Length: 289
DNA sequence: AGGCATGTTACAGG
DNA sequence: ACCTGTAACATGCC
Image 1 (tube, rainbow, N blue to C red):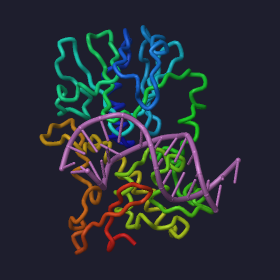
Image 2: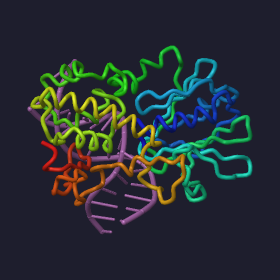
Image 3: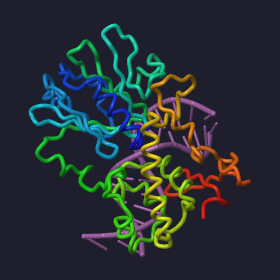
């Protein structure tokens, strides 16, 4: 699920639900996530209060007291659910319509909170992870240390872009998905941004014109903001609708749209699919130069 | 059965 | 030491 907009939406719903609550117990149902979860280590956070939740790139940081930080990455299929004592369905707004009974077997970690609820980390493919860090040095964390600027901050700008691509021979889509260049984009939004910017995903960065770089920057910010407002993209489970569920997938121009007509009404081409950096790449051969 | 999937990174080679 | 591309991780679905 999770590129920057989805993680941001999850962060906001988590902040509403669990801020200031106390973790009374941690139940590790499957310790084999991307990184092994050490039960003894996680025992240290029982009794601690969740003071604040922040998003950094695609990472969630739970600031606890006693200077602990719980860092979560959702990988490809990580989700949070809330379940009350009677096992009634609750979940973050992002996954509002999921059938929790079916999902339950992928629950990996449970956090028992002091309000009769459990916060559940659920992850089918187990590419996600949960780690404990110490507040003092969390910025030196391996994962966080080399992240590029947040795309929505003004440190992600034309000058930065121009300088970064100097002497690099990679293609633009590959760079956009590189967290060291800009942190938070993934395959879906990279495809969508390049369509709106009218730039072919396979263009070498060194050949991009100034106006194209500027367009890419501007559409990056525009698309991400728009997606956050719409609750992110839910590319599964969007059969019925309610006000809280992510709907940006309805605004995709190219992602997953192989053979569809180009959304530009004056264009008669269809969307084609190729592969860049081992990821599905969708674009319009006519509109994107 | 085989290919594909919203992500990251270890590794090999230049 | 830096840059780049590929394969691998775990699991389900079409």
